[in-house]
Image 1 (cartoon, rainbow, N blue to C red):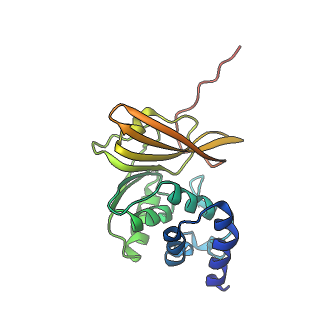
Image 2: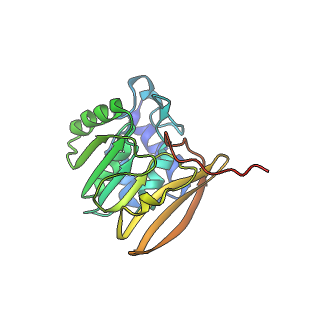
Length: 217
């Protein structure tokens, strides 16, 4: 299989049509080879428009959604990022390639270990990996320029937005299928946030995520 031709088609046929036009993001997709982060059995489909199973009832997001997240999060050089959901480590690598540092947390120890190896193989050393359940909030003491939550949340716990510096952003997909909204939350001041709805999508939920309350009449 000609992976470079497939990569070109991925960008031109999947990603650009989904309004990913930031040249820095597009260049990174050619530089950082997605197939090197997927399970061996799925490498031939690594650039296809699909979610790839990772085991443990988890999967990678589609390439177009990964790219759109990086673009919409407006990752900047020097950003300190908190990522909830390491998964394959590919999103971690994308973020780390554009930012100052990434602290990535996953509930599955196997994902943490695998991501550590893959990131090292690609010479990416500005990432701290941790195995923990952070679906309802993260207990770290730091504040971040950007928080990226890679699994969807029925509701967005306030504790996540508390981890933002003033001027910081948080990306999350919020809601329940079939209607979910990709959102960007910006901390304007110490006590004020702005929420922008970006686009509709439907993605797998973050394991152990807080559930929405449903009223029964």
